[in-house]
Every structure is written in C-alpha cells, then in structure tokens.
Amino acid sequence: INWTSQGRGWGLPLGGFNGRGNPAQIPADLVDKLERLALVDFRTKQGLGCLEKAIRFADQLHVVDTSGIEPMDSVLEDRALYLRSDAVTEGDCAEELLQLSKNTVEEYFVAPPGNIPLPKREERAAILKHSEF
Image (cartoon, rainbow, N blue to C red; front, side):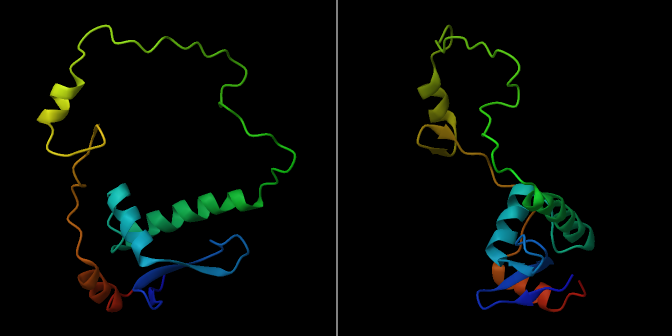
C-alpha cells in the first residue's frame, strides 16, 4: 500500500473503494478517526492490512442489487418483538450519577479516549512520508 499526499494531508489509496473499480483515497482525517474508533494503529503493516481487509469486505456490498427490496425494520422480521414499558422501577438517580462523571454531553456519559496513544497529524504525516508501506 502506498500512502500519498492529497493536498489536505495524507490519505490511504485503496482500489475499488468507490464502487467503480477505480482507486479511491481515504482522507487522512477519516483514517485518523477510524484509528481512534477501532483502537488499531494503522501505521503498521498489520494495522494497514486490517483496514484494507475490512474495506475490501465492505466493498462487496456495492455489487449487491437491492432494487425492489424494502428496508427491514429488524433482522428478526419473522419473530414478534415484545417491548416492555420503559418505566423507572428503582434507582432514579441519573442526575446524581451524571454529576459524578468527569465528562458528559447532553446528559450522556462520554467515554475516555482509546488506550492507544496516537501521534498528532504533523507527526503522522512525517512518519507516513518515510514509511515503506
């Protein structure tokens, strides 16, 4: 895999990603985001292989003809899904718990960042510029 610069930083070219068989660029900011979400270091051959394998697997969806197929509400369409009422039966301490959290956004807990220390974009660009991938 060759990393190339595309104006706004470094990106990852992969053949067929755009569904037409043409090489496509994955923008550097998307690679960074995927790296943080997946907690996989894409600066290694193993990490790049993992990303490429996942993209090639997902790329197969471009050739599936879904015309005339209605979207499903659930993958368990053949079963009845019984819903219970959403009533608090014990606790009722959401506000107290949210106050104990370091980070909250709109009454939601915010998870800490991943456990892989990631380099800043400038450091990453320098590493990728001199890599053999």
